Structure formats: structure tokens, C-alpha cells
Length: 502
Image 1 (cartoon, rainbow, N blue to C red):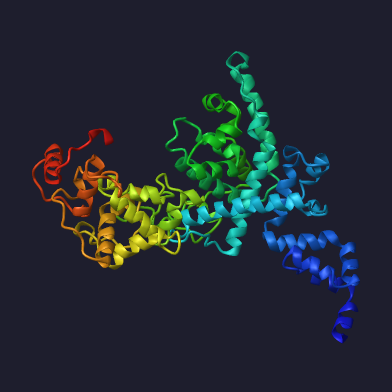
Image 2: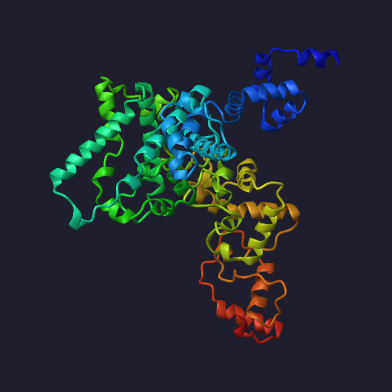
């Protein structure tokens, strides 16, 4: 009781500091319910206490995140939007207003997306083997600050600000150039509020987002859509990355086909004013051969591990190695590391060599084996066994599990070895049937129906798949005569095959 009495006698500023160090809102509520003196201090300084908790919960970029959110207030249709927008120019001033529950929720969602982009940045340029950011706290702060500043820019100059100009309504070229120059002056004025260091950080993030746009839209049929990715905003680009599609940006940008074909206000959307501001500040670009734009975020970044260890193609954002097998594969769980080729359980079955993908018996066995794993980390288990138990073919003798592989090389390795992994696991369970002379190229691999009767095609396929092992290379030199095999089966079993059951 004496301890509690001593606590109650603490000065208000000390109590305020204690409340500010609450790890969560629930902890704060429990503390306030303890004594009236704590609640009285909270009522006197609610904003500073809540902002301190949010700062620890969201991170150092909390003030920028709040500024960005309130800068977008008119778009989000928040109450008192004009007042919030007026205060958004200053990060120091904007935190004077209390944060709402809706804002807190939206900021968390915002920061989640920033974290995902930071993870991608780190994965692409810093550490190819880690699926989470390896940036230091200082580097992380630079990246997040730049991304928030860039998003503020896209909020100030959104694509909706520049409606498409119909061909018959276009002004003369000179008039359009005058309007573009006027708009660039507004953009220069906006960017001039940032320091040179902040502008260079923005340029580093721009290079990253542009490369991500090249990757995401490399298979789209719309030429030039990458030019719209930055004006649409980083979060729209991330959404396109999730689905490997331009659908999100098409929903966000009206008349996108026309804009891609002609829109002078979106050409050099940010680079022209950004470089102009840097020029005014007499910035000189680094000329060292080992210097890269991303060094403005982290000077630990070097252009190493940029090629596939086997085919020597550029890796880009698709890097398959021991620590990224499953994160790259689980596209259906919305991993941020999404290759153009997704490896769900179904698609893994379709990765089996040649006609094995049609083998119902082996497909069911593979599904069952994967289903018995304790986690969804099935690619790590399968590929780990192939390397650890030396199941590799001679042609892959020099391949290592820590190799950085492109998507094509990874697919080739998996296809060439998946049936060997299945055979290895079957051998652990008991004796394997004799090899089919036609191996994985056998034409009698199809749907497996355990209930099929003998007088049917399915019954014929069932008996063949159960009697022979197809997890092997073909040794027969002749062409497989399916009609003859069906005839021999019919005679041996004294049945007439019902072809209507196919």
C-alpha cells in the first residue's frame, strides 16, 4: 500500500511520461483505470500521450504517415477536411490534432504496405536470401521517409488532376508547352520544401519503383503503362505486383489507354522538377563506377548477385534460393515475392516431368505427402530432400541449394527431380512396382479411379498404373501401341472395354 501511495504522489510530468511509455492502447486503458490521478493527467495531455503510443506502435515514420493521411483527407472524405489539409504542410503542427480510431487503422494499413515495399527493396538490392528487410533502422527511416514524401507528391499532383485532352480539343503545341511549364513550376515549388538529402532519397526510391514497374508490367499488352505507375502511386504499383496484372492501375486511372498514348502533363512527371531542384542546389552526381542510386538509402548496396548462378540471366525480382523457396511459391497467401509462375500444391503436381502430370495415382500420392507436412513449407522440404539425399541427376551435380536461380532454372530443376523425390519417398514405404518400359512418357497415365471396374478404360488405366512404376526414365525404343495394349488387357481379363466410359 505504501508503494501505491508513493506512486500517487508522483509529479504530473512523471505520470505523463509513464503513460506515454504504455506499449499499447489496452495497457494504457488498464493503467488509467488504476487511479484517478493517472486519469486526471491523461485528460490534461491526451494528444501527447496518444501520439507517443502511436509513435512506438507504428514506428519513427508515424508523423509522416499521419501527415500523409491527413493530406489525403479530401480524398478520404474525412470530416473537417479543409482544416486538416491546411495543417498537413507541417509535420510538427499536424500532430497537435487528436488522432481518430479510423486514422489509426488506416495508418497501420499504410505502414504495412510501406513495410512490404521496404522488404522488396531490401530483397532486390541488399540481401537476396532474406524475405524480410535487412535495412538498418537508419536506412529503414530513409526509405520510409522517401516513400511517404513521394506519396505526398502523388497526392498533390494526382492523375485525376490531368483529364485526358481529346484530340479535337487540344491546343496548339506552344500552348500545351506553356501549361506544362506552369505545372512544372508548381511541382518545383512543392519539391523545394524538401532538403537535398530527402530529394536524393526520393530519387533512390523512384529508381526502385520504376524497376518494379518494368517487372510487373513486362507481360502486359499495354505499351507505356509503366509511365503511369509512378503518378498512380506506390500503393497502386504494389497492388499490381500482388496480382501480376495491370488491373488495379486500370481501375485507378481513367482513360488509361488514351493517357498512355498522349498525355504531356504526365511525361517526366517527377524527374524533370526533381532534377531541376537538385540543379538549383548545385548537386553533382556521383561518378564512381561502383556507385548506385540506391546508395542514397544504403551505402551497403552493391551490384552483386544480379545474375542467375546457372544461366547467367539477370535476376530482377525473381530469385529462387534455399531461404526463399516457399515465400516465392505461396502466391495464394499474398506473399510480396510473387513470381510470374506460382507454385501452389496443384501447380507443383503439374510440374512433374513429361506425362507424369497426368498420372492420377502419382498426383494423389504427391498431394497426400504434401498434406502430411506440418506446415505449408512444402517446397523447402521437397528441395531440401533432393539436395540433402543426393537425388540430383548427374547433369545437376554442381548445383547447390544456396545458388541464386532465375525462375526458368528453378522450374527446370524442380521438373527434372520431382518424380525422383516421389520415388525416394515411396521406396521408404515399401517395395516399388517394376518400371514401365515407357517411364514418365507412358501414354497410359491418366485419371486414377480406385473404384473403376475392369470393363472400362478407367479400369484399364487403374490396373496399369498400379502394376507399373512410371517414376523412371523410358527405356523402350518403340512407339507405344495403346490399341494393342487395350486388346491384350481385354483378352487377359475376358472383358469387353466400354469405350463410352472414357
